[in-house]
Image 1 (cartoon, rainbow, N blue to C red):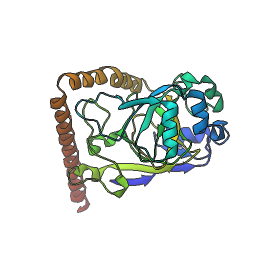
Image 2: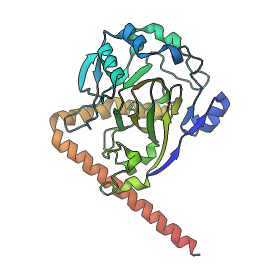
Image 3: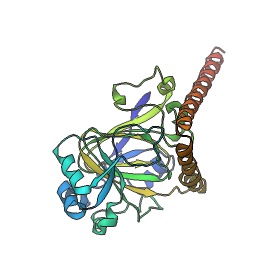
Image 4: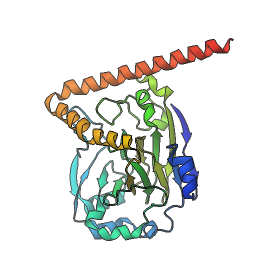
Length: 303
């Protein structure tokens, strides 16, 4: 896999953000974007436990989805306060995905500023909290609603790996899902290119998010997150500004997801292996296409 660093800036003007990152759909990390928010210092484990500790939340472990796993199906349930107490004590491979804490504590929206000057179409009823214990992993995927994401890290550090959606064949995208058949856990130590040879052609971006870092992730980008330390982050979402993007998001959320879940329910093993086989075949086609292009370029250079 070919990996380069995500651009980092301390602050950025709306004009520069639009021209350099939003319009060309490139990721960027703004390191001081949230430093003036009350949330930057106010949001702590104990503060969240006090406010929302009695609410139940779904938890996800590090196990990859299998033949019977529906989209977004959680692995176990726990009180939010009990989970945070456990996370505070040390490594735990459990994380919270898409928790709308603001539904239970609406006053929290006063602790940050919506980035309306950077991006339009923000879904202001759906800011989401993500929490993970040290060692927990959000496996490679892209967001099913195809929204742009403004993602701010608070406590803890998290390693992120991003790929543009056009890299899908090289990372073994499975049909009717937003998931990869390849395993990216501890990818920094090497990937299984023997069994997944197309991975060496994939072009990716990476960085480590620290307290206060804000990542802009364009719509449809693949991402894999590893919690290096226990921590939490907040995502603000904005609908794709293009009609084609909105329609594609609708397709992903409704017919695509319903079809995938129906096949998981009715023919789980067959569908599971079919998806993996299709991912392998599509990757092989992508490799052959690259090889033909390289041969053509090599032939042209002789003249």
